[in-house]
Image (tube, rainbow, N blue to C red; front, side, top):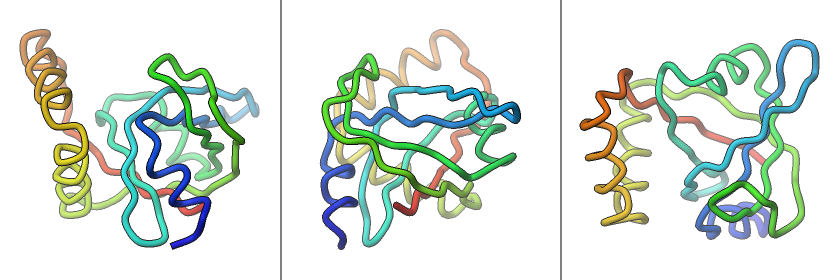
Length: 125
């Protein structure tokens, strides 16, 4: 495992910056897990960041606080959307890392009737 993967993957949150077609940067704080040589995040199928990743896999990532304020150096990476089995694997890893916090946000999503399936994203740094 590279030092960058370990540094980013051990963070509680990362700022994931995706890019619009016109090059505008769109940063978002997300949960992150590491496994091997990549880090992984999840998002909803309806999220704008997913559309931007599908258009261009270029991303920037940095450790951050829950608001997305960077707490370390930003690095460039390439993101790819995972298939259903990959998404399920990432969901299990996220659930294990975030525990009760994960369950709380899952419950809030159900109560708010947030629509869409969870999608896994692999990021190579």
